Length: 188
Image (cartoon, rainbow, N blue to C red):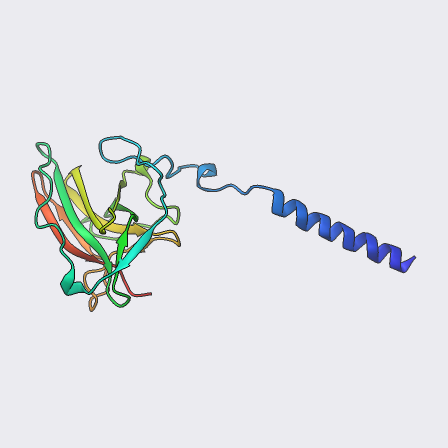
């Protein structure tokens, strides 16, 4: 009798494990506000968001970030740059990122960062680096922003520099074209 009860219990545990493995879990599409589909500032869907993020290696001195940014529409701003992790010498290619507005009285405080990545309906401005790690964003409303990279394993806030690990505040004014140069991610 004791062996039968033990066998039934073991069977129930195996059944529960099997069923839980087959049950889908609510991912980003099951959240109240979803990052999917991701939209760029022009309201167009970013294809394959999130895509398979990759990287290449390069020394910082060998990087060639854009020296200009796109011409924004009247009253808007634009940025350009390259996303990089110095210690590992990683250029983040085909990597999603987003700008999120600063909070607080002076709009210079880092807001709560979402694990799922940028949320266009919240006002985040979404983008993706190209195969060289280069990015441009155009027609951004003026204001204070933080750049947040969304590699496959989470989200990472850009920092001032390899030596200054404070979040990098990006202040944009109307009609500004701002090449950010090398945007540094912290060493993990």
